[in-house]
Image 1: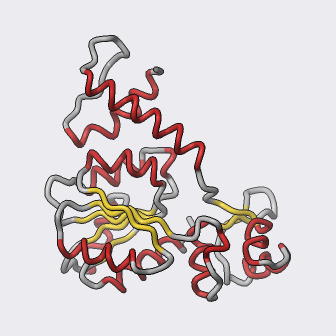
Image 2: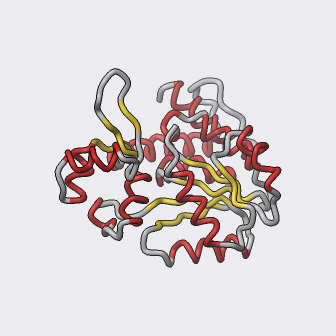
Length: 239
């Protein structure tokens, strides 16, 4: 097993108080060996099943059953957001933006094949967050997975490949800032949008969360519709 795999695995396990191994020697504890093996298997599975996260105008045209020229017109007039490849006229549309576009125009998202916006929720035992998860799961265009510790977050993110991560600020034994930092430091998860979810947060807190790497925040997890609006907002932002 390569040293780089151990390094990457250890990067995520810091929040669970597991010391990153310094070598691949036989002195690793059995549970550490199992964790690292599990990580490699999950990484392989992820690569085998990875969903295309950025699409061309031709890809979008096939989904919507229109011509690529029509998609280009949608892009140029701002109806469909994305970015151009530097030095060329080629357009690219993030998957999250296409899902938003399909929903806004009442086009069945099942045409995509993946069908749903994947949301990973990081929380411990909050009843408010549980109700929020139920609300999202009852919506046909969301697939929700919930994890209850910092330890679970890394492996779940690598396997589930969420479009959006909701991180509870109220959860015990969870460090939201550390989780966000780990996501930003993982090259495979750069497209994930991270939203801090609290209860009774003030507008003045916004800049503080953005400075710490979050894409946005939902001021009250009990307002499920507002959380959905925030999800749609951050997935429509093109940097």
